[in-house]
Amino acid sequence: MFRSKGFGLLKLIPLMSGQPNLAYKFIHPAIASHGHCCHRRSVDYRQRYKTCPGSAGGRTLSAPQTKIMAEEELPGVLILDVGGTHGVLEDLAALLKKHFRLITMKEFIENKKEMSKKIQSVFVFECRPTIDRELLESLPNLKVIGNSGVGVDHLDLKMISNFGVKVTNTPHAVADPTADIGVALMLASARRLVEGCQITVSPDTKYFAVDWLGVEVTRATLGIIGMGSIGYKVAQRARAFNMRILYHNRNRRRKEEEEAVCAHYCEKMEDLLQQSDFVMLVVNLTPETHKLIGKKELGLMKPTATLINISRGAVIDQDALAEALQNKVIRAAALDVTYPEPLPRDHPLLKLNNIIITPHIGTATVQAVRMMAEEAIANMLAVLNGQPIPSEVFPK
Image 1 (cartoon, helix red, strand yellow):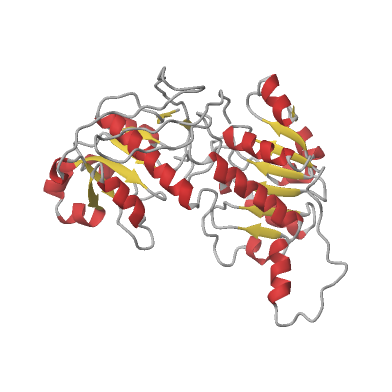
Image 2 (cartoon, rainbow, N blue to C red; image 1 turned 135 degrees about the vertical axis):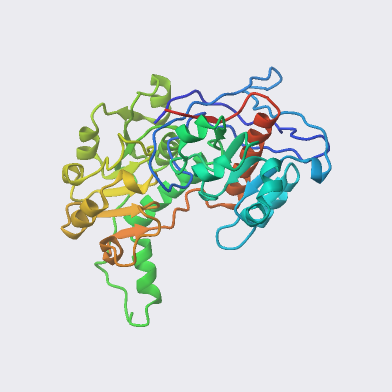
């Protein structure tokens, strides 16, 4: 996880003369989790920002000024498709069209000779299109890959860098919705909402059992592993429930940041695991965090504790988790991420009644999806116009 100073709201960002402005919240420059993951890679999430003196009480992220161009003059951006199961949402495609000429993979494959010269950027949405060596070798004018989402573990950053291509991500739009889903999972698991809904709608239900009980979140202890922007926003929300907040992070937060959310630092993760009623994982997927939570760590948790994962599925040893839930080593689990996604239909975790699994919806809101696209557009235009890049990601 990463530490950084907090910033205020961004002003509107003029991207192209005569075109609508893009605006989004500027949260922390480094964010612990969430985008969508496919594979595990090492990443250095350093960010670059341009400070504008006209920004009141904060910093303004500036995007390059460009002239209005006819569609045939717009830089080409490669996307998988528009609509359908895996294509870019139609609203986002319309947004991209204001600044780029859209070229789908089908169009590219059918006319590689012409299209390869036009494509200067690739917009990666939900891990697609796949960026491999063959694709990079076929795009001689490619300058930037704009990833929609903060997680880039599906991209081989070192290989891409070797082609002289830059990679950007969208950390500013994801913190609030991902923190929201973390708290939602905590509440849903504590009060057994999914199970309760099933009981209520079941045709076999004739009465509600008086001994069907959940546990309270209020005044419970929450342990946050990974106190970046998302983790910190989880802590802010947990304060509303008067929770005792512990956190473990690679770097300790400043004293004033800790005091603002009444958070207590645990230098050893083991100390946090032993004390927490709810443990929430909010870390980037790296070689160091791969299977961070395994049989040993689960054994340190309270038998009444709940494990919540809003980071990456591979952060947990899922076989060990299934065993721990079956044997009541911990009370419950709530996951927004798994590995792979979706899980095989015969996976042991899908057969348990003390787990909630959602389909990686941390940033699946109308607002977040649009804001991520806006950030990606600002990043790609900055690269193409030789301007400072708001959110560039570097190989470690």
